[in-house]
Image (cartoon, rainbow, N blue to C red):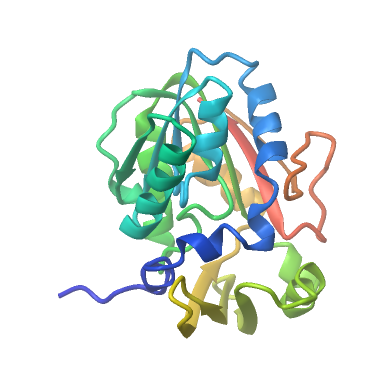
Length: 256
């Protein structure tokens, strides 16, 4: 019997509350950027990895794109389907483990935003399997757009101070960093949240921060030939935003 990981427990019954979080409010602006990177070509097929409640999948579908949303959480997928139905949209949402996608060269674009699986896995090997699986799902000439935790940030800034500044009213989930391990670049934190039934929870979580050079090397090992990394600003992704140590997340744009 496998042990349930923290990210599985977190998303068991958290769809409606998740949609209220501060970091989920930039969907429209983020999709504006994705569209520009796709050259507004809505004939291509997109996979949204770790789609959660489907916010990017739904928004891009409304703009005319063909998107498949996948997520490990059945509860998140159920919430995504509910939202799509309310919008009158017919979208393929699938319960899938991002490490083991059963697609081979099917998609011309992949998005994986707001830590959609990567880098939440409990080992570096499992995180790599996600990148490997996405690479396999993409056809030659494809684009892969994702965000991930910036390993430069905790070297220069305090993680708890960042969370307090971005969520001063302490609404939604609250994250308290306990330890940042310089040998593994993993942050051990306690997450406090209330689920959709109003039940309060406390979870010990383990998240991996990555340096730009690590991401570049990992993607090159998977056949991506062009890798560009920028600072990620919620709701305002831009190529003009050069990556800095103060950026909590990195925006990665890779092409095969």
